[in-house]
Amino acid sequence: MIGRILLVISWIYIFFGVLGIFRFSNMYSRLLTSSKIDTVASITAIIALVFYTGIGEYTVKLILILVFILITGPISNHIIVRSAYLNEIPVNEKEVKGWKL
Amino acid sequence: MILIVTMFLLVGAMLFSLIRLIIGPTIWDRLLALNLISAKTILLIALYAVYTERPVLLDISLSAGIIGFLTITLFARFIIAGGRSN
Image (tube, rainbow over the protein chains, first blue to last red):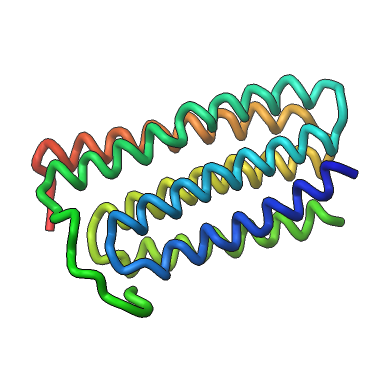
């Protein structure tokens, strides 16, 4: 039961992750929010799967995947933003309102 | 049933990330989209493993995660080392 509720919650995160990609004007804010929300969506979905399948052979592997996502998610996003920053992308571009593709 | 819906939602999210990959003005938007797609594949394979009751598939999703992480790292190093940066 808990697994189903958590899965539904992960839907919301996935939806906002997608929304975050298109909605922000500044590239850095786009990078920040969509990566953060995406990692949270992954965590929620994996925990939902753990509850969904109960204790068994799935749980160990799912926990391993969860730990992997927890470690590499933020690191890979940091790498992206660092390479953007080092190549002199101005951080505080002027805020452009509305959809900026 | 709820797993199938989640899988379809994930595929939809991947398609949107693909759109961002195509139109992304800078390289780093494309890298972000690539990162999102690799994260979504981890989830998709895990969900499929649970849906078809095959725990073997979970190893594949872990290796997909490793590959995705390595891709991002190598791309970033390529860009920092003076690749084509517009």
